[in-house]
Length: 347
Ligand code: NAP
Ligand code: ZN
Ligand code: ZN
Image (tube, rainbow, N blue to C red; front, side):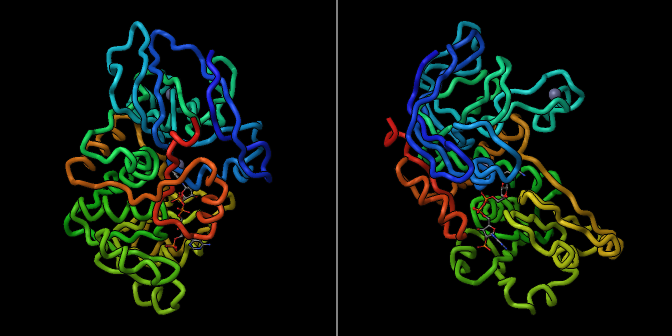
C-alpha cells in the first residue's frame, strides 16, 4: 500500500479538497503509473454530485489519465518502465461473460470495474485520476503514441473513445452526413474525428458563439439550436447524429433531423429519461441508440487513428487548485474544450 496525493469530493454538495488516498501494492500483472495529466469529464461532475446515484465519499474521480510507467509487476509483458501510457474509464472486467469474450469488455455483463466509484476485487472502492499515481492491471493500460502532445492526450481516453466508437460503428465516412449536438469535451472530439473519417460534419450548438472554432476543428456547417428555424430547416438531413449533451433535450425534435435509416446515438448521460415518441421513429425508419465508451482494443485503435491523423483535443491546462472553478465553467458550457489538470501541481 502506498499513500499518494489526490483531490477528492467529500460529499455531493461541497467543493473537492486536497487529500491523500491509498494505492494497492503492485501485483504480478499490475503497472504503477506516475500520472502527468488528468482530464475533467462531465461524468466526473455527474458522479461526485450524486446525480447518477449515491456515492461513497471521499471519492477521487478522473478517468482521462496519461502518465509514465514507473514500476511493473513480475509477470507484466505489455508495458515497460518509462512507457507513456493512458487509462480510461475502466480498469478491469469479468473476462468471462459473452461480451468480454467477444472483446467488448466495456459492455461486460457483470459490469466492468470503473476507474472510480466501482467496487474493486478486494472490496475497496476504486479511486480515479485526480491523483499522482495509480496501479492498474496491465491489459487495461493503453499505449499513448509519442506524436500526440503529452498535455493534450488525456481527454482521448474518454472523450476521444466515446465519440470514436459510435462514429466507427455507424460507419461515419465519405458520403455520410453527421451532426454533432453540443460542442463541449465530447462534442469537439466528435467533430475532429468525424471530419478525419471523411464525413460531412454539422455542429448543432446552443448558440453561434463557438462557430469559428467549430469550422476550424473540421465542421462543414454550424447552426444554433436556439434559432427555431434550425430544427425545422434541417429535417430529414442526417445519416448519423451524435448527441453529447449532458442535460435533457427534446430528443424527438432531433430524431426528426434523421433521413432514411438514420441513427441518433446518445452518448450524453443526463440522469433523467429522454422520452421518445415512437411515431418519430416510424418516419424514415429511424433508430435511437446509446453507446458507452469503447473496448480496450478499440481505444488503442482510436489512439493510433488520432496519431495518424494528427488529431489532439483542444485543452486548457489548469492546476489542481482550479478544479472546483473548472467544474463551474463546465456546468456553464464555458469549456474550450477540455480542462486538463497538470498533476505536477498536486504533488
Ligand atoms: P461538456 O463538456 O459539458 O459538453 C456538453 C455540451 O452540451 C456543452 O458544451 C453544451 O454545448 C451542451 N449543453 C450543455 N447543457 C445543455 C443544455 N441544457 N441544452 C443544450 N445543450 C447543452 O460535457 P462532456 O464531458 O462532453 O460530456 C457530455 C455528456 O456525455 C455528459 O452527460 C457525460 O456524462 C456523458 N458521457 C458519456 C459517456 C458514454 O460512455 N456514453 C462518456 C463520457 C461522457 P454547446 O455550448 O455547444 O451547446
Ligand atoms: Zn468521461
Ligand atoms: Zn464480462
